[in-house]
Image (tube, rainbow, N blue to C red; front, top):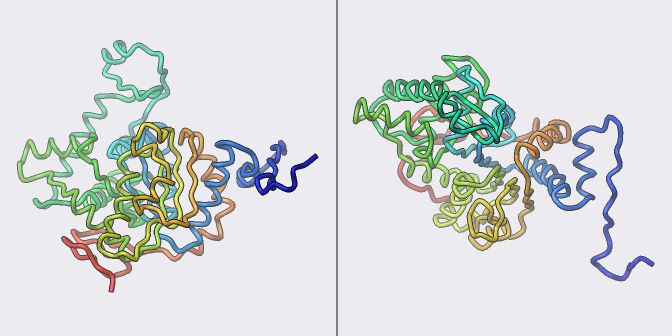
Length: 358
């Protein structure tokens, strides 16, 4: 007999019914009534759609080897169609995006291949994916050559990557993350740029001219926090944890230090394979983020424990249908990223200090 008296036994699990020709958005909507990570992925679709309709500034954090793993044009689509307003990425994802935008490729390989054999042919392996070391070296030189054309002064990663995306677009006219961000005027921050081949290319420019290749990552902290101070209703989407996850959350915390009305992200979702019980930031729970003030106490949030290369194509294919009207109606921030001082909606930020809201 059903236990109708218990408040815990009110919403039954609905067995998933296979329907021929079912749309992806319908599939994910019904998956909210199954269990485990299927339910979480269904909730992620709903929460992201809520963000899009809630006049939020949406930060996207991208870690892992997503560009090498075939996700770069999905990420470029999110930028170009303004599913997000600000991208925070590892240098590796941007570098591998640049690699393919320049006409190079990554190749299907095997995780069981002999790495000694690969090394002998100068083939680099990312789990089951291969790339040419010679082509990577050419990329590094190309980045160095570009850096040597810039005025000799420090650049935030936001300004450097905007200029790099513009140069890449002029040279290739090809779609990618960097070129989409340039064409759509969406800021990209890369707080750990030195930990990537982007940083290696910059170091090669510095080797040729000590006055070249200077990047000011502290300026990234100031600009990202000022964005939150001025537009405090924020949301966070994190793919893979890592430095981008903490940088997005730190922007909210730093903004709160200068304006206690910020209050943390209003919505958050993360797709991660790490787990919280080892204490690392990548796997930390969104509940834990409440204690730091990174997340509003009443924020809608979900963690999906899954490989991003499985979850993201399904999630975005669903949102393309279910969120189409909401996406069109978004009130977009207009960024000017062309100089040392970022401007939003025609109003520049202070360049070297935090902005207190009046």
